[in-house]
Amino acid sequence: MAIGSFGYRAQVEGGGEIVGSINAADEAAARQTLESLKLQVRELWPTGKAIKTRPLNADDFRAFNQQLALLVKAGLPLEAGLDLLASERGGRRRNKVIDAINADLKSGTSLADAVAKRGRDFPPDYAMLLEAGVETNNLSQVLINLGSHLEMRQKLRDSLFKAFGYPMFVLAAMIAVGAFMGWYVFPLFDRFIIQSRHNSSIMWLGPSKQLPWPTALLFFLGENTTPILIIICAVIVMGIAIWLLLRRQPVGLTLRDWAAEHMPLFGPAVRASLIARWCDGLRMGVISGMDLPQSIELAGAVTGSPMMTACGSSMNFAISRGLPIDKAVAETALPPTIGVAIQTGITCNNLPETLNVLSEGYSKEAQIRIAALPAIITPVLLVMLSLIVILVFSGLMAPFIRLLNSLVLLNSFLN
Image (cartoon, rainbow, N blue to C red; front, side, top):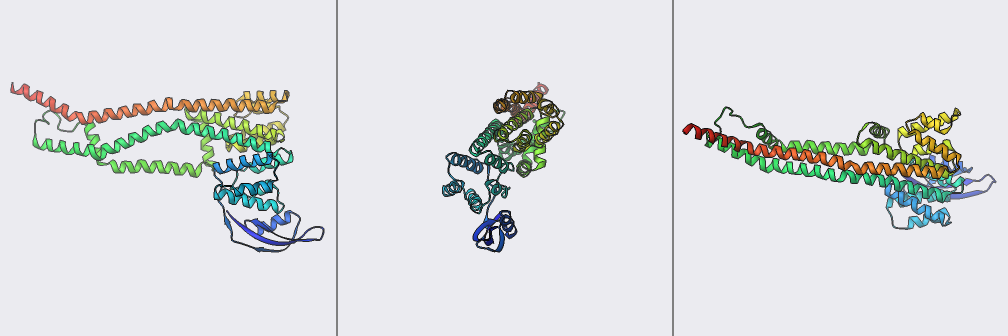
C-alpha cells in the first residue's frame, strides 16, 4: 500500500482558512478525508514521494499494541505516544505505519478511522475495538485485553508447532536416510549382485531366477531416488505455498473449520482453540462497553473463523427473536454449556469473569490435546521407520539367504 503526502488549503465552517498536509493513498482519498472533517478544500497538491508500506506481521502488531496500551495507560497523548513509538528501534515497516497514523491524527482524524483506513496493516476488528475503547473511555484496558488475547493465541500456536516438531524431525530423518541409501548403498549392492550373477551360477540355483521382491524394490528405489525426492520436495513446497496463500483467505479458513469438525486427532484441538478465542473475544467486547450482539459479532471477528462467525450470526438472530442466550447458543454449533454459563454470568452480573473462566478452560483443553498429539503421531512414524528398516534389511539379506540355500542344495546333490 502506497501512502502519499498531500498539501492542502481549505476553508473551515466559520470562514477561516487553514493550510497543512495530510497522508493518504491518493488525492481522492485525501480530499475525502478533509471533507469528512467538514473542511471545504480549495487546493490540494502532492508534496513528496509515496511511502511504501506492507502489512504488519504478527510480532510487529503485538509489539505496537502492547506499547500503545502502556502509553495510553500512562496518560500520554496519542500523538506524542506515537511519536515516541516511531522514534524507538523497530521494524521500518512498523515505523512507517506509525508515522502515517500519527499524521492522520494531527490532521484531525480519529484513531479508529486512521486504523480503519489501513485495513491491510491491522486485523479487521482492531478499529472496532479502538472505537469502543475511546467511546467508553477505557482504551488502555481494551488494548491490554487484546494483548492478552494475542498472547493466548500465540501460546496455542507455539504448542501446536512444538507438538509437530519432533514428528517432523523423525520424518525428515527418514527421508534423509532413504536418500543416502538410494544414492550410495543400493547402487553398490546392485553392481555387486550383477557381478555375482555373471561370475557364479551357484547363487542362482533353484526354482526362481528372479531377484527377491524386497531386493528388486530396493534396486528400483535406488535407480529412481532423485525423481522420488523431487516429487517429495515439490509436494512439501506446494503444501507450504498453498497454506501461506490460503491461511487468511475464506477458502483456507473454511478448510480449517472443516478440519476442526471432522479430523479425529487434530480437529478437537483446533475446535477447543477456536472456542477459547471466541469466549475471550466476547469478553473483550463486554469489557469494552459493547452490547451483547456487538460483542458476539466481535467474538466471531477475532477468531477469523467462518464457522464461529456463522454461530454468532445465528445467536444474534435468535436473540432478536426474543430467545435467551442459552437457547440462542443451543441453536448453533457451540457447546450448550457455553450458553448456560453465559446466561448464568449475565444473571449474576459477572459475565466477564465467567467468560474468562470459559476461555481459560478451553485454552487448557486445547493445549492438553495438542500436547497429546506427539504421543500418537511419533509412535506411528517410528512404526513406519521400523517397517522401512525391515524392508531394507530383508532386501539386502535376501540374496545371501538364497545363496546359502543354493549351497545347501549343492552340498546335498554332491553327497
